[in-house]
View (cartoon, rainbow, N blue to C red):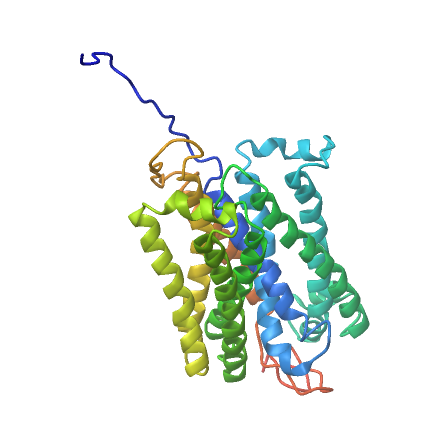
Length: 379
């Protein structure tokens, strides 16, 4: 006899909890940490050959580091309640730890940036201009102090390590999402952030820098090395999933196995990594703008795929959730606004302290970058 009962299968469609603001925050804070790491050889360890690249990396660290917390506050849904992190003791929450690590890192970054740029501030203070007094005040009467720079660099390095740890682990601990729940994710966040920071340095070298060929070659070589690490992490993750040696990684692959969109995303991810890797190795000079743009693009899209794409995979049920990027503050406007804030900070910093050729060791530079003497308004 035919069963005449009607069976309804009902599933719940859930809105994304981590908005594009989160993508912007993880992207910017990652670039900041990557920029800091790139600046350390030239400044904290006083290697003059790294100083031109380190100067651009310092811009990346400062501008991205100052813009990132704005995106984070916006992603809290109720930004006015951020202070709750500081009145409620939650040591079991990685977000709570992050609320402590971020101010620690940003404060250390500002002190480190000041120590690194103090020599330039002093040089600008010697120029006959209306802002000379402010430059001298900002320099606090001192110039380059390698011991101070090294101490500040080690301090902020500790903060950067904590930020890199918490941003990776707070996502990787989510067991309900196999795509996130992997020990590779913190490493992937760090390596892709470092690749994005190198890419942004290569772009700034052309846009606001002096198009230094040595910076371009060094940057591309570093980019190739970091992209090799990115491919290694991705290959190990894929191998564990395909081999079935780890049930979590196998479940992550199974969750997206039937999706054409995820298949296209995987092809894009490989291409966005292999193409700049090959270009950077084959032709490190003259390709910095191209490899830089691809590296920055892939760093951002990796985070978009992890957060927005990851939330499109249901925790229970079949199929995938659809996501349409809204035009308002929680979508496109938020992305553009965050990028605009970063651009404003970049223009402000490079207007006050233009990127100039680094003088030879032991020869102080004036505000225009010329070794030795001083400039006046007439010049």
